[in-house]
Image (cartoon, rainbow, N blue to C red):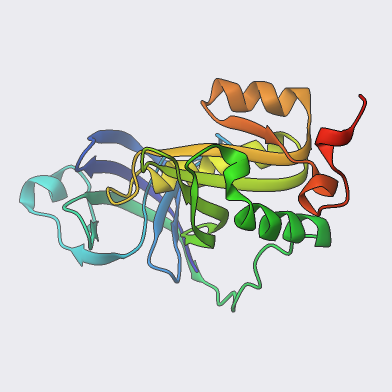
Length: 231
């Protein structure tokens, strides 16, 4: 991973256009090819980014750009679309590279892993007509537990937790932000599935258009017949 702290302005051109005026920012260039632009706020969220597959080229500024103080220009292109992220660098304050090695990924506990397997086998619990596309669908920031299709053929990303809290909703939100930028998947709906969902997490999920589903682990394992209960 390469870490660059620089005074820069940023322009995104493609399906959406966005401009970030000159300021000091952190630029992350990851081994998977992604480029992220961060400020010293907004928690984990980048101000702008380009997801892989993409390519980075460095070009010299023209006379007009140089007169404005631009030292170099990074042009990040998306390999699948015409989207471009253009970073105009005025001054580099820090530049370092670090080999992080291969990340083992998030290790779910036994119950969460089993819930994922069971829900993949019983995908109809999400609704009539749902079908499984795959488990552990990989994105640039990690795997989504389940990618499914609803009865109308729309994409559905499912995040599974044993106990659903705000962090889980935030995690699914990040996945959805990336997946909805892929024209082959978009629009992608989100489902937050857990044995127990905390009220704050449910409120946040509903505010973001994410559906919540409570999973009955015992019933899914065949240890409890919900239809034979008296109450």
